[in-house]
Length: 259
Length: 309
Image 1: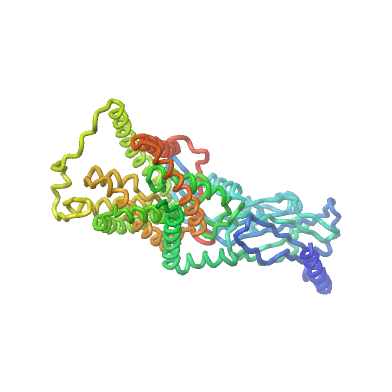
Image 2: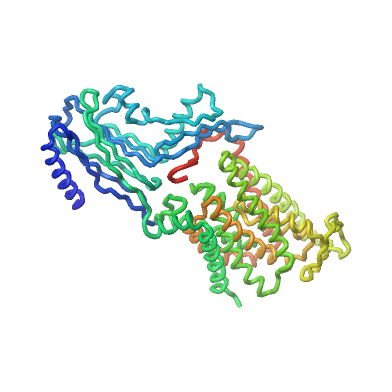
């Protein structure tokens, strides 16, 4: 709560300075935290995005042509989607499609249904909404053109099931006429890296203003040391694992020695 | 209690993992096996990524075989010369295994190969053990003594060149089948995340005719080092050994093994082998069913590059 108040303070200050600049900054946003730390007790968290959109004269539940969308995007990944088929009576992976540079995490929050915010091509350009994500595929693929959409849908569905892709329409809440907030849940399995939090303000389907914040998701303490050891000093890590295993086994044989 | 695994990058219920380690440890103590072939599928079914499961179980097998090796060592029931030659093959097999593991993972057929291998090996060995133990139980009930091994008995393996004398095992046999056996088991162990004791022990007894009293200690000793090598190769190659997961499994495993070993002393050898045969066949069947039934989801995804790959 204290953190929340602190951020409200920060952003009110930001908002007042924005007011001086008039139209230069119609939209101001702040995050409840700029770093999400993953420790051994990490089971997921959420971040709060605060913001103020000036000159919108928006009444809660009575939109006046102004709409907001907030996108949280994780670091890019290359992901292969595979489809099983029957081969000699056994179910095996047959076709594969590789999606390149797709977000490892993607959550979008908006004031109304995403399709109503702007035209399809605007949403496609900005990558707002799961249906408008730019999922680039690699040139080499054994998937028939007619099946490409099935792979796309399956990919998004599997990511949604894993909690890594999410669409929360109408989840942005207005605190006053111009101040808003929304909660974006971050599940326990979020990948580490630098995230982008992009906020878009639309008026009558046109992009009026946009902001971008960064959010770092990082392992800290023991988790970080272990991970870095495994990545950068893998030989040492391997010997350490073996030493630990032999020691544990040896200790057990001493503790439970019968004679 | 949820604990975040640093390499698997997911939180798991630590007590569930501990209990799994304990249960498999119990069975491994009961039957005198490593238990990798049970633990790896259990971890995969419970949602740990297959690559992490396979690599981490190799570490857990190091711990469980280390604790058993100590007691066989005290009883001098290890043929170090035989174990060392098996080991040379084992390390080589393990290295080839890691390379193949990497290739299969990148072409998306790792799960298939693991499943098929489980079906084949568990089915074959479970079937043989079932056949053998049922025959032994029948023979015991009928009261006829099993035909003892005659010293002059030879099979084709004893005709191979490059013979070496193994004093502890009272054997004079070619190194070719010994290295070959080590290589195959090291290879399978690395790819499948199993120690391979359940394949090694029958092979040493039936193919090389190593005395039964020496077999288990020798097999465990070679598995200890092969799996230690596999852990290091996995650490360097796939970077999927999760030390926190391994530690939890190890502690559960070594405790469970003690209770299993005590229970095992109350059961007859042929009964134990029958139970183990059924267990091995059961796991093999589970994989076969998965391959044959229409899958719930035809699609699957795998991260190839970037965060979390």
